[in-house]
Amino acid sequence: MDLYTPGMRGHPASDDEVWFRRFPDWNLSCAETGDAVIYATSDVFFKYLFGNIGSEPVLLSFINAVLGDGADAPVLEVEIRDPFNVSQFAGDTWSVVDVRARDGSGRIFNIEMQSASQRDFVGRTLYYWAATYAGQLTKKGEYGALRPVVCINVLDFVLRTPRPGWTGWHECFTIKGERDSGQLFAGLLSIHMLELPRLIAKNIAISQLERWLVFFRDEGRGREGDMTDDLRAAVESDPEIELAHQKFLDFLADEDLRHLTYRRIMAHADKMAWMDYLREDGLEKGRQEGLQLGREEGRQIGRREALRKIVVKLQDQGMQPEEIAELVDCSPDEVRAFLDGLQTDRTD
Image 1: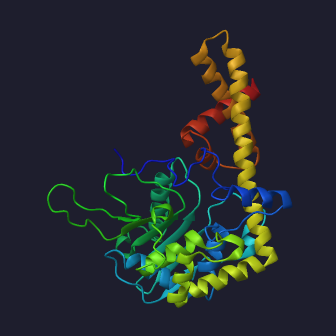
Image 2 (image 1 turned 90 degrees about the vertical axis):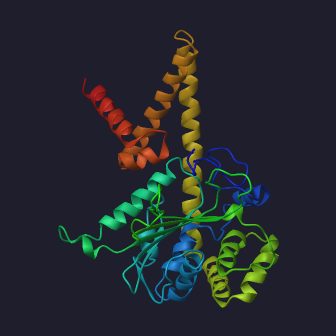
């Protein structure tokens, strides 16, 4: 059994109910007023917090908190690459928002907040690591110039398959020998998975990494704007967490940033609702046609009809097969084959 299985969450939810959760009554009241609740797990705030020029101290604190929980060497200085810029989000509600940085030794860090489970999240993580690693090679054959790439994923859902007696919330994956030596093959790959729902409330977090995860888990979730006891303890005991808390308040006070975040939340929520409708609509048509073909064949027709509508709509919006594949239960090759079939039908 794989250590990681997709689709698991720390809180009960349907497969598509991923953006509005945990406090249904708050989200209902906000929906009625045209607003949405913003948490510290917002990918826009995550980029704002760690990706702004001048955010180096908090980014350095977080990276070292993650590395200090494992065997990686600490970071002494960090350079933010691809800094936060509001204009980069203009008209874009689909792309992945991550933070990229490099330390003094050349190590590259790719840091991402993931609020919702994805079917191929593990594969996507490996692809991003590979693309970042290979992207360093500017001249053919200069493999000695390749530097380690460290991916840090903060997850607001449970990804790992539970094991009896195991309650950890931080795992670091590397490449090691499996048979005899257990020796590290190369220190070029590190993938950290931090699962917020597994973090147990303690009121006083022990490690710096626990304090950071309490911040992401609890910020914005206290009743009537109050901090939870765990968050208050983290803020009062760590100056960098206190700075992050103030940045969150500044973020909420900025009308443009709030509007940008609302747009992304609403766009994703609309996307999930729209895809759910298309699935149901396609399945219903398939059921009707399948009355003469048998129940199983009817389900296949329904699924193909739903996929047809979804794929055509997403292609018309300019999305590539790889992007479409992340949103439907198909591989990129299956999406391409499906699009080729649609093109053939149109030309016949």
